[in-house]
Image (spheres, rainbow, N blue to C red):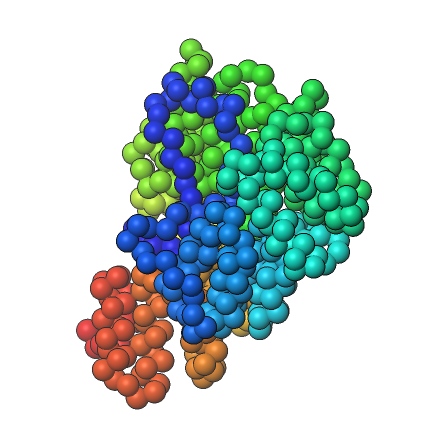
Length: 513
């Protein structure tokens, strides 16, 4: 399985229960906190990061150490650790963009700004920077001491089960609340966690009045309303957020996740609650929880349900459990032949089996049923490519971009076919999805073709950061060594490429195989 090396390790709290016990968990369910990380392994020696050049494994370890300290409310120490980490990491725009978002997410906005200041390629970073600032940033820059204090309150609320005590102290600070929208947000969060819904609503309203553009405040407002007497009002905020132009894929997923959580909280029917909860877990990439919850939903209903089986098929497919995906998809299709999720999964199964003509039929049916997503059209275009109808595929990609400005894959495919747009569209694809490895690799390829070796190395380093087992990375590294006259190192990388993909012809050619 490919190993995704990111700056953070997301803490997945697996609930070891069978589907029937999922009902008992409802009162404890809250939105997954995207700042949660795995605790430090017992065999990892905890030491403060030194001011040295840190590679990606060091970044991962030091981030985990710093975040452990943040969780324990040792915020001053964590702050310095994060700062040293940002200043010491090997210059890498992907790292800086990740850190900018993570720091903003936990209220360390000055550190987020520091990470942003380190980014060198604005053509790649402008979308994520704009989304981070619109989603998280307060209206006024906080003093460092106020920022650290509020981070301590936040830590106690989220991680240390001290929401009532920490919030009680915060609300005594009238001057800070009067001047800081973020302080009001934290007060609202603390009141929500301690069950004081009217006070939570009062403080989040104050935060929004001071900063109406902040989408994280709107998100919390929706969560608060979902707990109140008129939870359906939360859906109006969700609709508002869906209309905002969040082009980065990470932030658009946040909104989809929130929508499913609010639907889960607002539905009265037990089956519907569990369905939306399963969907929420899917968007949070907690696939095991998603499957267990959806199985629990089926246990509450005597009749089979097409929507649940359709979603289960999608989750199983993403878990690489293809037989279960097919079984669920066929059950869903038998009940409803027009469900776009079912049609896409059936298409994916046939595409994987290289039954491209049959896959195309399913994808076209999904395309006809789903007008609000570019995914079915992308699948159609990909399949035409496999059927060697490149012109038809390119026409579809061009058409997609006229309607969906956030379709990073369409930008990528057009870049591969149009040299005049190659660099601009590759960068656009990454700007929308900074974890899009193929875009980074092809940027490295283009710079290598232009003999810009140093720039090629930077882009390829990001691809390695994301997935150290991609065969193309080693092939292009081999080409770099070859241009430098380092034949032995070049051959080593070509062999590594073939070890990962024995059928990769360019590497075979380099080794004259």
